[in-house]
Length: 398
Ligand SMILES: [Zn+2]
Image (tube, rainbow, N blue to C red):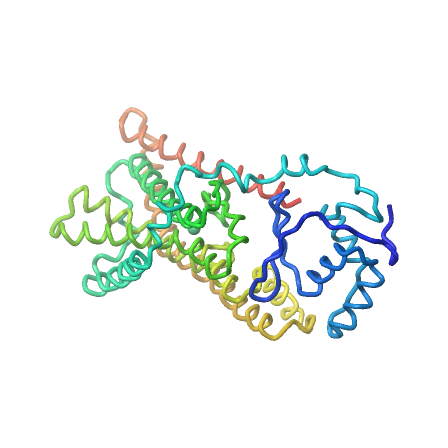
């Protein structure tokens, strides 16, 4: 089947919602979302009315003289995206609706449905939001009032045993991560949308992520709630950790040390929010604020074009500004990461390994030897998990 200028294309059932700079088009059956421009949305509307590609192209070229209208190209793209139901009155072969919905992400059912919408909404009541803002202010105030509370890399060494330290780190990190994700899940549920928890990786780090494709059904302002709820939860936990340390002055006991450990984890995560190249929550907030989606990809392109010393396509003014700013943040993210590695991760790893490796030479000593073995096994296990996640994302990218 070939698309010609005389062709009449009937798109599949689509829901169109206006967004900051264009439209978000939802293919509800497949659970996919697309960003489209005004002319594209108009073209879809005319297609549905049964006009030929030729006629639509003529009309849209007159209405949008600055845009390059290529209806055959557009129709071919729709075919590729499986968004065409009929071409010249003939059903387009491919997946039927039922097959498509079988492959679709579960946007309507499941996905933490047991968290009721009113319960989730309670946590985002204006009073609660005011509370979250005061939590952030209190955290800053506490750090200023008592600079000793600021985390140090040594906070991870609670015990003599490295295996125990790393296990505690894994445990704390996992609990805090789940609470962070719970923040996102609550936000998504507060709009009555389903959420899904998945595993992935960002740069060198294994991460659990809440999949929230459903947020594309929301307005840009509503989407910010979903993106920021995780960091909000982190701030609440940080206040708790700082308060515990504040309430237990003097030589820190186990509880205070545990709180310091958790605070370190939370502060590190906060800094990572600024590393936009990892597409963090904050990245999505910026993307959302500018209405310029795939900021990262566009900025990379822009950086590449700049580095090659050529001017790219003349992008729209707002978009170009957003992309430029983003490119600066993008580069700054790498500087942040190197800083974190130098200040926290490298010293931690060096101290751990230099403590542990010599112990391997003395199996007769029992405890310390096995501690070293367990610690190194954990390092290898974590490395393997990371490798697995990397390979998985590579395979998905192809
Ligand atoms: Zn998050």
